[in-house]
Length: 322
Image 1 (cartoon, one colour):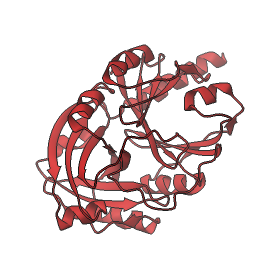
Image 2: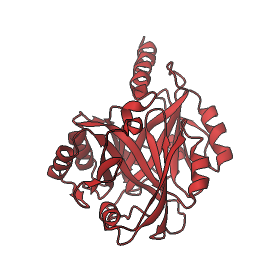
Image 3: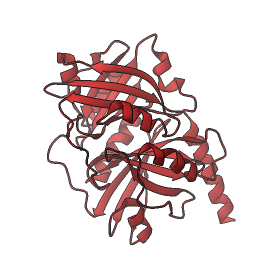
């Protein structure tokens, strides 16, 4: 059984700077720091020929962010790929006040080329970028009633085959996906995405604590990757799912078409495996050892916040229909 999305992995150029910057995102606070040494186990787990990295784990109210500063392999120079580029494209910070989200992120080096956009859904949207060019989406949810003031809303993927990728994750999590009508011919979509002539299909898979969001851009087109993106490259590297039975979850992921880097490994406080989904994105399956329960999804302060936000959103929609 998958208990939830434990964390999203992000490769950064400067760990200390990134910890300070991302500490402004949705209540994230550093709870652990460790190193990855160049061992057979680490190379096998990450699918790299050699590896050396510093890592910090930041805990939010409903999910975590894991930051890596790689010395080996060198992560390359910062870049700003467009949001229609294939792969894990962004994480979303939601809050009751998008102005408060802005106020916390802009002093931390995040840049927002456009002011928030209202797409008529009840949310306000704006895409920004970190110092390294990674996309952060801010969403204002002024209708939300429940605490906390901010949280992580989703992690997003861009894919050339929406039905295939959504089907994989829906089957892995054992939930029904939600598909959106085709979105196109709107200057507002162009403003949010920073693209021109946006024509896109979208879907969502709701995890217990964090949603997975999927986009297939028909224009500008999302094309398939021709190779596997190394987890050391700057930007979002993987999505980790906490499970209660690693071997069963691993076998299920492989059955659904995932390609493992290797078998599950014992990492001390946890056992984990890295695999590639049908698009080649890295997913991690992780289970915590006895004594490390404080790092579990179940130990987060508001793991069900998205359920409360969804109820408030439904109430808003019902009021608007009257």
